[in-house]
Length: 607
Ligand code: M6R
Image 1 (tube, rainbow, N blue to C red):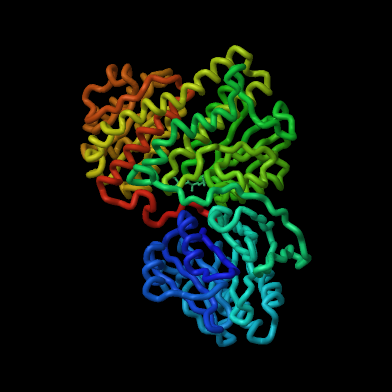
Image 2 (cartoon, protein in one colour):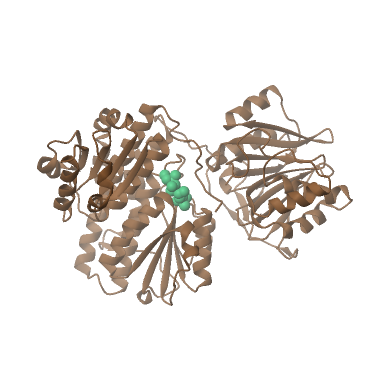
């Protein structure tokens, strides 16, 4: 899950490659590097850490050249050092890679036995040596690549530069995305259309197993059997502007604040307000025949799926399973006819989720994809595309994508309920009205930002934090804990409130803050009982509830956060706001890198 870009250009490329990397940094920021041909030789500039370090390196040591490749890395094999930074090169060849070469050990042993010397600990370097070896023996770059690709197991997107062919690059993809961009007398390769947005909007998406030769004049694409193929050129529509933070200190905060607008935007395409009906794209299969829903996702998107399970079961009375995508294939899931898999993903590229999608398809399941990037691989491979309209999410911690996913999933559950004859017009009208209240409720929840900031110091000193919730607010407890750990590095766990007494309550002492999510509603009393069990053992509770809830149970808490009173259907969306803001302010208090927390990347394209 690295970002790659390549340019065969008319003018110098280094600056434009770096500009492309800026747009790809969400894929990893352990190191960055560029390579270009200068004076008949391959030259590289590489730097450990964030892109800013590479920019400094290029300032003091500029890199001329009109054909080049560049990379931003999320380390898989080998520490995030300069020597492990891409591009990896021999005298003849330099290349950048996104993915994992699973058989690299065997290949490395084979190459070492033939006298090749390695300069890094990466899996990628074997590809540079394999291609280089053939070129050194007189093979053309095309023949060398065509011979090497079948030898690579795993996933890859590659961009390869050849000393002897200075006006050409070769790209290849299997399991990791790669696009070709068509410019005016220039041609490009990129991990996605976003990387190429300032250069061109004319994009062709390579398919699995494709490889491509690009020159200034265009691209020749070949499939996995080396047969020439055409891939349609589409207009990406991705903006060339770098997304700005506006007046906010961090992307994460900006994205938290965008939620009322983007949820409204998303709901607009799934609700018909005049008729008070849900309105979804019509799939090419009969929704009424769906007998089981299997939801698969990772991280925050998985928690959105956990919330949706309640809705599919309660509204549509359709059995729903939720699986962490990385586990799904390996438990040999039983998938019967009439099954629908719903994948949920902000990026639409998460490798684990994509692998689960493909597995389910091979087992005859229909696929619906709730994704935020409509040009992503998942979007293109699904039978039914249900886009979230959150706009680009830059902060590594997912926020607005989550609430938009919930909005889509609630509408979809209602749609399925209607198709199953479980939702009459009156109930649908009521449900649509509740959903339509979400943007205003999110706005009201944001009004508590300052009071959340004021109490963040209570959490910032903790070593461990617990989050509790019940029903659809239990996944919110998990989400709160994930947000806190990923950006503040404080250990946090979410539990179903009723589960505390079965073990975790042993953790309670006066040093472990417990955040309780308890909106008024059918589960309030029971959640508060569990909260009181914690308090009885000296636990320090922060209660997040509405005015009535805080009045009824706020006494004895170290802090309370008051949310607007909302219908239980939209509570998971609204209660996402305080858990996001709390994690954000705790991270700021601790001085961590909120938008690019350590060890993480925004788009996780390795399994
Ligand atoms: O792009 P996806 O929604 O498929 O990504 C899934 C997870 O990697 C993502 O939600 C991750 O857990 C976030 N960093 C959470 O904030």
